[in-house]
View (cartoon, each protein chain N blue to C red):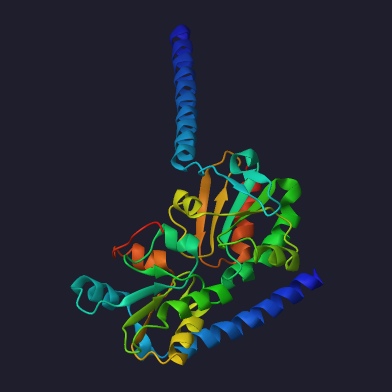
Length: 149
Length: 175
């Protein structure tokens, strides 16, 4: 029992630290709302490269049409795949990152992905702000969705 | 006069009995209708971490808490110790928690299960499993399933352990 309580307390602390770091580290001027992204995609003028940095099981169930799956960016494999995908692109390429696995403040993938692209010198990166999860904030609102790999 | 009185008494008693029986029958129908309104939990057979298959329908007769989670999901990690406690506390009364990991690989799940002393089976979920349950497009999502295999409630997002415990206790007591 004591061990469980201790474990839970340790988890809660680490979660709080993690959540704070993730939530506060992406400035609002680099975020894009679901409404704004849906409009960008609908107009079809800016042609952003949309990248999903969450899990494959979530991507396969539903994703933004045309978006590319890179894998969870909090894993070495996911972050490396993302690096390889973008390294040859012009640094002013319009890129949109999204995940939606969890509530915004708890997403473990968005911040590492954004940090990587910032570190590589990309100047036109937007991160899709998903408050709750991809299902509630994108699919349930009727925005375009695709299934499968 | 006395005969008429007796006939009236018999009619009143008969009317009372008929009404009571029809009322019970209606209650029974309502209970059945209510049960029918609850959707049957979609069945699945998925591999556990040790490779053995787990079939959800084989747990009929138990109250099942079906938890969709992942190791990278921070709220899920917070719920796990509570689920371990609930499993331990209510196992004898017929509770079975089943974790459906939505991790892309079992690799991070193995150490997680050991670290948290998870005392209930974990299966590796797929996109198909998620779709069967209406789309698992955010974690955690938990379903409470009654002993007849019907979904009683769905909890999206981190849920207070007391909420689960209250529901589970009620479900375990109702049979």
